[in-house]
Image (cartoon, rainbow, N blue to C red; front, top):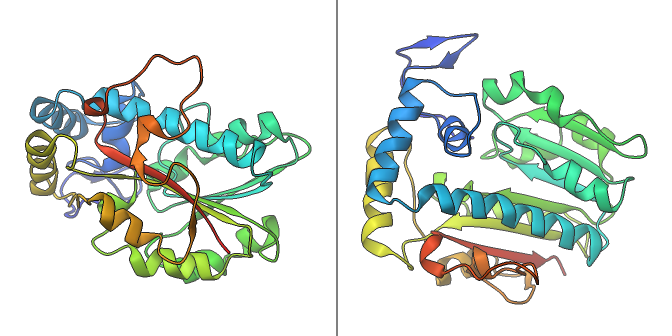
Length: 271
């Protein structure tokens, strides 16, 4: 996950406890235990700007689960590369996809030392499959793609699903990053993403992003057209770029209003 700058409060092997970090803010709002006062203060401030933030974060997590099930089930993918993993919150991606196809292989990528401390939870693969963890910055996709851990776990000559969940809003210009990742993938691979927008609730979400940016975690909000542009050259899976509650909702799930979310979701196929 992108780091919030500065070094005050640094402790625990380089973990900066004095400034908010997106992974720990996310963990706190989801009810986790891996956070510090700065993260809780930031989360409370962001939620005061947009009270639906905790709801949207839970919907984002559920969207990742649906994407994983669709990719493993409907698309038949057995190899996964999860970019910007964050602090493990069960079920993790490997648990979702190996529940459908136990032989699935999953590589997790993050550059947060606190995620590294919890990486054992990401490595509890099914006996038939395999998981690995790469300590790398997603903004350097070449380093990710040449990692020995990745090359020992995934066969890039066969389809891979790359998942980038709730990460691109922390990258100023992710288009080159996605192009480089997609160009390394075999035809029949997929890119799945969720990313923040102000299209749905512009005033509240724009204010929330402003407060996050002021705390040293720049947050970039994108329109639907901009998200579609990030996936240019790939084949969008139906229903295209949509509010994440509308991406393949479970048939028996209660309807979720769009105003409960601040993120678009999309899956696209490499052709």
